[in-house]
Image (tube, rainbow, N blue to C red; front, top):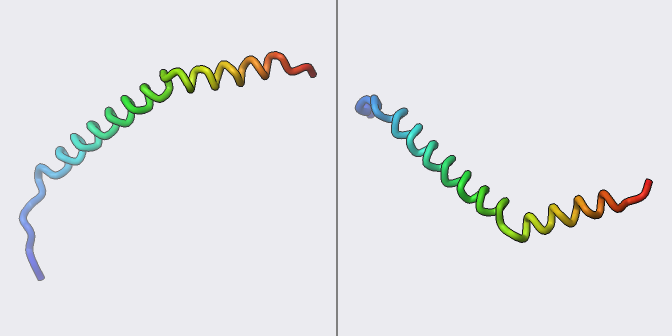
Length: 54
């Protein structure tokens, strides 16, 4: 059986990596949503929904 050292700083490092990953994901998501193709697609869907007769 191998005895390992203590992991006192481990949770802080994991939180830092998680925060960086979440910020990167947010930046990518923001760039995708604000891109022209997504805005055009959403506008087309809304226009089509408003022109539909019931």
